[in-house]
Image 1: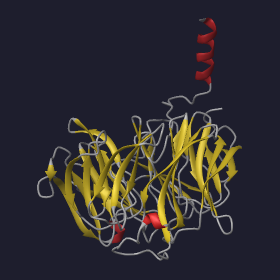
Image 2 (image 1 turned 180 degrees about the vertical axis):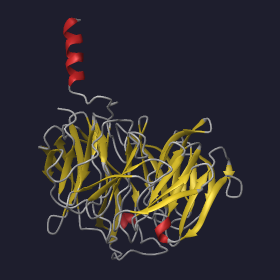
Image 3 (image 1 turned 90 degrees about the horizontal axis):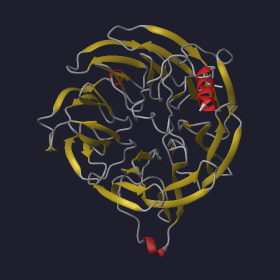
Image 4 (image 1 turned 90 degrees about the vertical axis):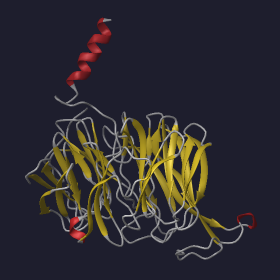
Length: 438
């Protein structure tokens, strides 16, 4: 008993004061919305100041780090003749590479210039880690003729693009690999796996037969599959929250906003539009779902969660329609804090909304261009810009810039927060910011 108490007290000495330690298991953290409940997260840093370690990352990728325990998981693509999609495991204490696995080896898919061939953030539960990549393989007789697509990507008809979902142990042992379906998109692939109970959920919105699918975490076996009837590419993972007295999984994409029961895949409610394509994830706060989109026109919208069926005309709480590109986002996801929503546009303008009413409270210019999604911690918002500068802003109804932190290297990946430290992936490195935990 005395030994256990001593170990517990010793542990407390190495946890930053005021920190409610959290893991960061996948895309946008433990709640899938970019929020951290921790305090004492670093506010100021540079290439040399307040940096615990800096590790080189081979290849190119825009995925975020996933963290659990003393391990950091990251995906990347080794380009040119190698054409390998790779899962990396680093020691979170010093950034040392523990192991590296080639998950997919295939020709590189066509993509948008702002996308990468390793944009999907892995997911982990501390025992296993899951990845999603796109693989191009030769067409066989069993595949049948090519699909008639609305907009065919520049691929020869002899090639089949397919999503590959893979499970590894945290020690690097491969457990299973599954192909839930094909994926046609002229802009490439970016659909991170989402963990829910004992399932893994993957969005397959594409310019062909589209789907939302849940796989068994242990075996990869299919648990349920939901048709996505609009057949239009999008790149958003769903957000799963408790809202209006029920568990809801809300997904923007394919010309619609939809809520599903994550246990069965059954649709709960639907909203038409408000645009064609979505990249930014939805967030939930102050009793409303909030989205920012998209292409070909830009929108900001809040939705009440208690609907059923088609609620386009009844449950839109407020809607900014077809605003200029500087006033809404296509790629960066929004973030909620208290009774406010915040959105950073691709052009670098941050706006603050009153959640209930949609009243715009302020708008300020930050970076030149933003691709990464913001995170929040301790009442502060962190906005990384493509040029490698992270702007720290107070989360409130008045604009207050707290700090400007320059790593002097391009940054397209969203940051991760865990145990009092911030992890920032730049074009060629992974930074662990803050001295936090030892």
